[in-house]
Image 1 (cartoon, one colour):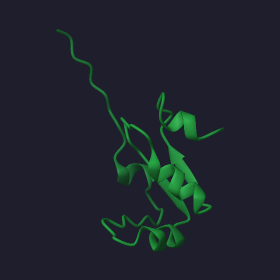
Image 2 (tube, one colour):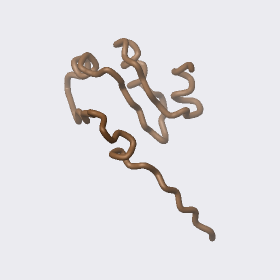
Image 3 (cartoon, one colour):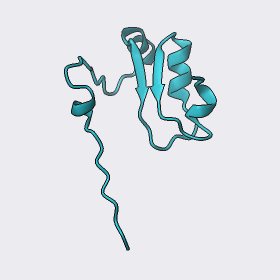
Image 4 (cartoon, helix red, strand yellow):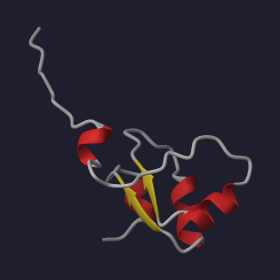
Length: 77
């Protein structure tokens, strides 16, 4: 069996020099959306992306993977 080495950039590599806050858990999601400028959903697998709908309803810019039958159905280019 052949293996393939995939090199992915780390979070630090991608956001080097950018001020990023990883909020962690919160019971008050609405206030977290108010504080955010951008909402990122980096999932590799997603059933239905409620977080994207919530973020867009809050008027936030969203960034997500182009997942078939999930994020692709919610986000338009």
